[in-house]
Amino acid sequence: MNRTHSIVDSPIGPLTVVCEDGALVFLHMDQAKYPPKDFGARVDLGRSPLHAATQEQLGEYFAGERTTFDLPVAPRGEGFHQTVWTLLQRIAYGERRSYGQLAEELGDKRLAQAVGWANGRNPIAIVIPCHRVLGADGSLTGYAGGLDRKRFLLELEEPAAVSAGRLF
Image (tube, rainbow, N blue to C red; front, side, top):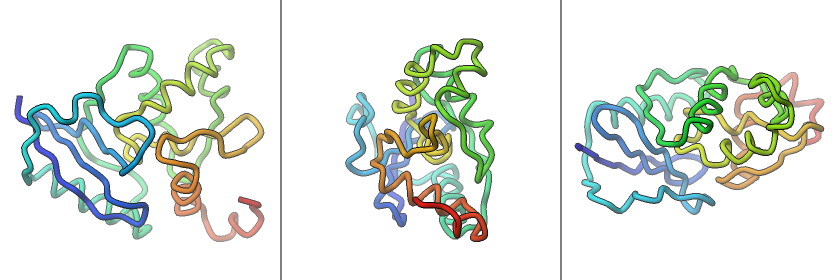
């Protein structure tokens, strides 16, 4: 196992980028609710082409120049979590879904709470856009990185014409 990490400065605070065997496995926000469990195990500080690409693409995203990420990702999690994270990757820049809508896409609207649980444990925030998921009424509910960060990311992705009519 070849695991390296780097720190990327961002408008929402430092982001820890962890790559393992050629894929992004964690993108952790400082003081997020659910830190990676095995983050401290054999992590070497290092720079690789993937670290450089991640830093570049995040910089472009925060500058409003990038709407999709082109990075190899390998999030760790159970089968259901993996399924939810795959759905999250299909939510386009500037779009939003509710937990219930994602549950319906999975075939059972009663899974909304389980979708929220998996969403909150997304190990590659921003790149796997869990911030684009809202409550059924459009409210900002739950975000492991904090609601201020979620609001920031949603506003970043929102066209100026639309944001003029929004309350949050």
